Amino acid sequence: MKKTVALHNLGCKVNAYELEAIQQLLEDRGYEIVPFAPGADVYIINTCTVTNIADRKSRQMLHKAKKMNPDAVVVACGCYVQAAGEKLEEDTAIDLIIGNNKKKDLVDILENFLAEREDGGNPSDAECKSFLVDMTHNREYETLSISKTAEHTRAFLKVQDGCNQFCTYCIIPYARGRVRSRRQSDVVEEVKRLAEAGYQEVVLTGIHLSSYGLDFPEGEKETLLDLIRAVDAVDGIRRIRLGSLEPGIITEEFAEAIAAMPKVCPHFHLSLQSGSNGTLKRMNRKYTAEEYKHKCDLLRKVYGNPALTTDVIVGFPQESEEEFEESRAFVEDIHFFETHIFKYSRREGTRAAAMTGQIPEQEKTKRSHVLLELDERRRQEYMEGFLGKELEVLMEEEVEIDGVHYWTGHTREYLRVAVLSEENLMNQMVLVTPARIHGKDCLM
Image (cartoon, rainbow, N blue to C red; front, side, top):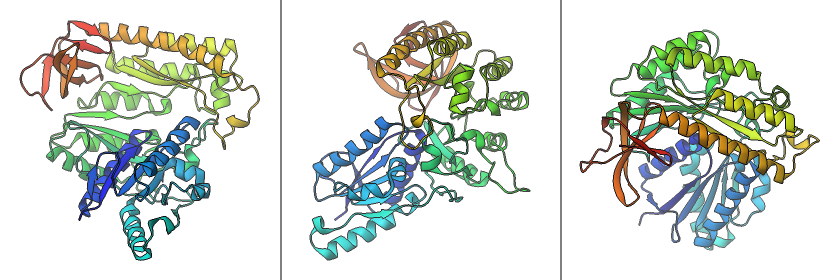
């Protein structure tokens, strides 16, 4: 009888990609994937550690899994596991601990554990086993790949891992290790398989995507621009979207080169974190607000009206009222399509956690609300600029809005558009002219 496995992902698109790759490895070995509900033989939770809240959610999901079936094997993998290390071995809810760069071996590890446990007789007697690699010295890119994805029209591809930046608020360089890049030929082969499976849009993603290729030896150097050009040449792919970018990669040459490739979508997520130079310096970000604005100007110079999105942290240690106002004014001036606002979360093991001048939670919440209101206003303004214009939309799913069935999809700028249609529009490119806005959707 097939063993059943339930999967749950926490965190970023890289984590989601890795868990989908693990799912395909499990299916290839004959496991049956079932919903994350009571009764599974195995529960695999891909954890996140980007904030203390992410840590807490990871622990909660691990304990929830064990409660759903006390006899099940609970597998904890991912970034929280890597950061917490051997401390998790004391958690009785966890049977297997699998760190980063060991996910490719997860099925073998699981099968060995299951065999040992069955030989031992009583499941509760089995000890937790840990498989962790020291990521600070690991230079190997972990090879995982997919041939399908949970999304039916858009495929996320992990092309890079690790980060060398060491922003003072971030634990990820310790959990993910240093920059490691996937060979261009491997990426292209995966894109070809996805195109053959019917996917029309791919999203290139990584932990620090802008660093792609920095780790390759001299004489074998490949840049992110080289990779984009190679993916652009794959037949069947009609859209290329880029994951989060650092401002430093946006040069005039880079902007003009990607603008010359029609497949590259005019939708760019440029990490900001703060519009105050004082705060940026304490964060150890590698640019000034003025330099960041120049990068946005370069993209607008070649694209006209691209969708620019960003992340902003409020309440970073020592952020004064004046610095917050500088940041707010800067965000207002840039006119982002979307701004993702995060209240600073003190993360043990980072330099920012030890800084003086920690901001009270109440003040962080107040500042967050100010930027959330600005985000809502700017999003509406950007969307209104597309009303009455013909837009290309890749249709993705059928949804119900106010009791009416629509097909929804995204434009090249990543605006969600809802279309009334009795036809099945799944994975079709259609031209539509939206007439009004309903929440976060443009409607026909």
